[in-house]
Length: 453
Image (cartoon, rainbow, N blue to C red):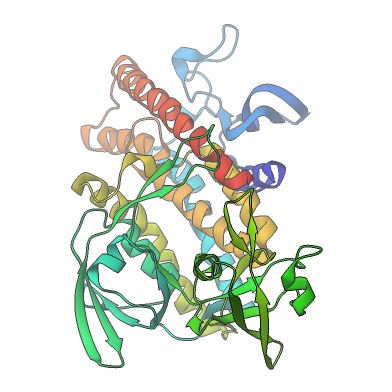
């Protein structure tokens, strides 16, 4: 999984650096090195004036150009004052184009990747309305009065657009008062729900719960509760004819939406007869058995292991070139602006810093998604590519956007900031980002187990 994630991230770094590389070449800049990754070089070869290499630390890469950092030129090399092909001797607009090219390629790549996916066909909700499968007792949705079977049609007055969009909107609304518009059999109602922080429970006594820094309300789509494996040998469930993949519809007349409802109802039978209503293929079956006391778990059991399968509420949608282009534009814009929406909610306290993800989590998540299917992986690749492009365009001194900012200053001043002043700004920014990177890496390491389960 980690290897797959590294391959995906390295590819995005490659196309980013290739953007810088190709535009630098077009502008006649002498490129000394093109590297994927930092640190010791694992593989390298030289062609012409450029050394191409893959380095040991895969989180990033660089294009080293002559005259890019005149004060750092090695003794014996031409200085930027003498090297006509040095980066510093090119026009402001040429240097801006080189700096802009990396992020631009990331964004354009994501756009055309999305367009290709929309033409090929992607899985999308059959309906934008959200049919509630169950709510978690004691969590915000249940407290506010959201019920299984309710249909959520709007959030804060905006129509719903499927579960993924719903989770994103709730995720960035931690502690805010969110209004749900709900349709149910008795009519329409509006409920105010306050998302609380999503916390992943500890898996064992040696681990701690993992705070995720985003909002959650404890509402889930419709699922089927199934028998995950064949019943235990010698169990009453096996004797009664239960099988793997049977769907449990009812237990003792109680409709089932969560598997803990099965456990509670069976345990409550206290050894009396338990009636199961099952769905097997197109057939509805009734199975009757007596629960046995299990000394290890201190409760009555029938010998089955349970799991969830989502109801199929999606279908594959393929689009023509024009519609795919329009959909790609809309998705690219949404992903591009999501960074700014996220930071806006962060400053409002509706997202916590625990939600930050660094390269470790990105690699793990990318590998995880790749294993879940090619379509999901490519969609995630487009998301990361756009975020990589946008983040690099922010004017943050050590990013491509920071270099563009310095070049704009040079254009309007008629001369660049002194190397001394630029170096001071960059060192301060580097110290900040190094500290931030270490902080995010610690957050990553606390979450990495979630992707390795």
